[in-house]
Image 1 (cartoon, rainbow, N blue to C red):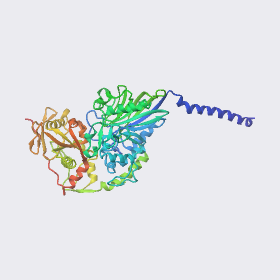
Image 2: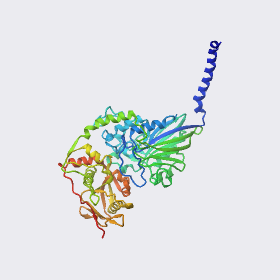
Image 3: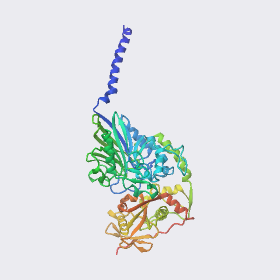
Image 4: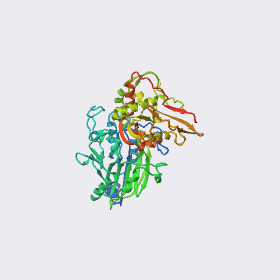
Length: 554
């Protein structure tokens, strides 16, 4: 009897299972809302390997300890996206440019390849994407060998699988954006519009060559124009990828202290904007401003913003938005094997450069400090910066300043020096920058060496000198009237051209006066400058100290 009834039972069970399956498949369609996850990064700057951090930018800096690297970032992205029906990876610019050697040596092709493998879908163009000009950025998008050096990677460069967006970067020859102004992505029948914008001040951060043929529109005006265009298409869910940002004083959740350029842009935006994913300032924050969700995920791939959106199926608009900022921790996140293999291929190709002979030094270049806080290695770097900045910018450079925490190693033995040795000294891939400052501005920078009871003595180039003294039980101060340039007293009202690196120009290590300087011009890479300086003075004889003097109080 049992065997005779089995086919009938099977038929009934099949009908029941089919009905359950149909309910499961259509369950998401019956829901009144659609959930969408955005995973966002910004200011990656080619940091394929976990970065070695400089000293904190300032008292409110949020450097995660021991974090980053594309292999761990890839693992975290997979972990966070798991279980989400609708997930998209987006960027807010400066994914390339000012990159470490592993990426910059190959014109940032390894980073484009890695981010494509990561699954990045869309990114705003940042100012550093344009460091080498529009044509090179278009090559990053479309692929092809470098016009000067050819194909140097393990395979021909295919270009990005993700799409750059650039609503406010206009090609003078066409009158149109150099990349699409916006992109549309659909999730369960609901469309989201993504608008990509770079900071309006980008031309001031580029060489004349890099900005040639381009002009840059106001951020808020451009965004609002694109919002109107997208809403005309019936799209109500609107996300802005904005390469401009802000600062918070006491960590990423201290939204009441939000300051910086972002605060002049947000109030001007159409209230239809739901989310602004920002960057440029290398900070982490997660705030609600006038109903808009605002995020930024620090820099160098050390953090990731996990953004949750709830979209109303009827209106198509965002009805809820929240975010979590995640640290890409080396201690708890495993490395993705595919990314490890990708990095390894480029590491092998990099070895000939690392072993390249730069020259011979006649004595060690040490970081041992004098009583005044000066050292030989810092002097060499400052001299190299000034020489390279003048050569690369074609301008007279009066002085150069090197951040004390940026000197990460020393050359302890007389004899041959290889490029790898120099890269240990300056591993950050900082860009040299020339800017205009008054004598009063320079004095203000020098006073910032002693702000808050600290003694962060800058390394200065040959021909520049100053004195400082102890003051009070724990303090110190610049000696008034002691600053000299080529033997002449610094004139407070006179304009001087000075060189430093882009970290300092951003107000790094508390030297905020640099951030207000004028006529900013890029002037090459720091470690390249050091190589050229040592290589052009053979054999290299270390300079003496004595540029900075500690004097007794009167």
